[in-house]
Amino acid sequence: MKQSTPLSAIALFAAHALWAGPLSYTKPNLDTTPPGETKSVNFNGASFINKGLVGMGELAIGVLDERGDSHGIDPKTWHRNPDGSYGGVLYTLPDRGYNAKGLADYPARIQRFEVTFCPDYGRTNVAQPNLKLAFKSTHTLLDFKGNLTTGLDPDGDTLHGFSPVPVKDGKLTVDAEGLGLCKDGSFYVSEEYGATIYHVDPTGRMLGLITPPTAFLPQFSVPTFKGFTTSDQAVKSQTGGRRDNHGLEGLDLTPDGRYLATMLQSAPRQDCPGDKVANRVYTRLLIFDLTKEATPAKPTEHYLVELPTVSSSGSGKTANKTAAQSEIIALSRTTFLVLARDGNGNGSGKSGYASTAAAVGYAEHPLVYKSILLVSTKGATNLAGTKFESGYDSAVQGTGATLAPAHGLIAAKPVDFISLLNPKQLARFGMDLNVIGASGVALAAKAGHQVGPLSSHSLSAKWEALTIVPCCDPAFPDDYFLLVGNDNDFITQNGIMFGQTYDALSVEAGAEIVENLNRILVYRVTLPGYDATGR
Image 1: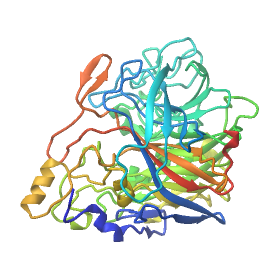
Image 2: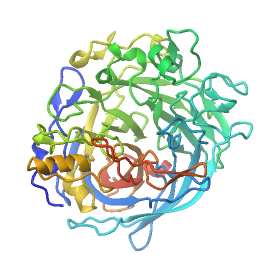
Image 3: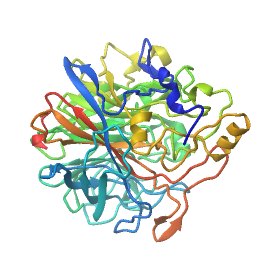
Image 4: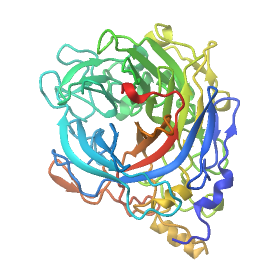
């Protein structure tokens, strides 16, 4: 749709500003690299190259799994066909179900798809999605006695002799987020309630679990609260441990399968001065050695990892949010890809018009930051076995621009690699960066401004999945496809949950939500030194 003030027109504001502390993106981090061209980043003495968006896939509206529920996405596995196309098995991991009207008794599960992909390296528009998904089966997670899990808020902390484990009504509570596939076909699943990692067999039956260090366990100032509850009253009294809805978000195995890496979505409570959203910068990364046992009791490595901060208005004002991480990929034991993002976009309910925000297409909450970072732990301080792991000592000091690791600690710092906010490359696959709802579009028109409306083609708010698959190109042995998947929060007009239909869309002025498709974006990247043959 033609626009007189398109969001792509603000590309000159893409550059980030450096704070004395963490990286800060106060204006939209747009990538203006045209289709067919490359962009490189120097990292640890090597050139990592983004060769651009070469594919997009969608999950059709109304597709149901074997339990009658809608899907989430988190891709896996790959091979090249003789005709130059690609195919394989793709596993997905929904979180805790559609819960806009309260938490759901949603059993955790792993989905299996078959995927086919024919990359498009051209510069012209692609008429149809070139990544196809075919749903095949569901593996429902079962606990150690064969019982279903739940997505309800946990108010107990023991079950079947395992403690501490989040529990509700005798069921393990699982808000599944990270998925790692082992060579033997088993999986590791990380979750948010208890910051717990489950090891499950290929059918979904639990084999064991990894409980987090003390520093990750919720601590409350009110003694009546215990376990992992995320009730409003408990959240207000929490003083330490993983933040509610910010547990172990990212998880991956190293290419050789010897180590398991997992990361909190943002800083634990004790590392967030003043409990301000912009101070959640220093998250925690754990590395577990799997060479001796599948579910080790303690991590061998434990690091602070710095995340960027953003201004949610994109107007250049002081950053007021942390770009929380939503997934990681272990390129090695020390090098990682980290997906970090803001919360703006379709599904967020932030679709207002701002008459004074011409620089960001008159959007009250424009898309500001959704990026894949490169992170190395080389030179960072290993906190394993220290008081920062065994207790609730704060590992940070300062606030805002002065926020920094305390006590001489060194954090792993990120380097921006790929910004999903590339208007031209997204447009080639029929997508846009529009965020203003119908009511705002009408207000803009009255003021003489034509803006693009929020639609099912607009980039969604939550991007929470990463995987790497080889290009199998002898001419470019270091080239891989990087698949980035979104979390649509089960937002659809035609949803089904527990046999009941629901409509998750909204026409509320300034809070419109339209059909939010599950999507996968595919980038071709050069990752020097990375070897995926062990995966």
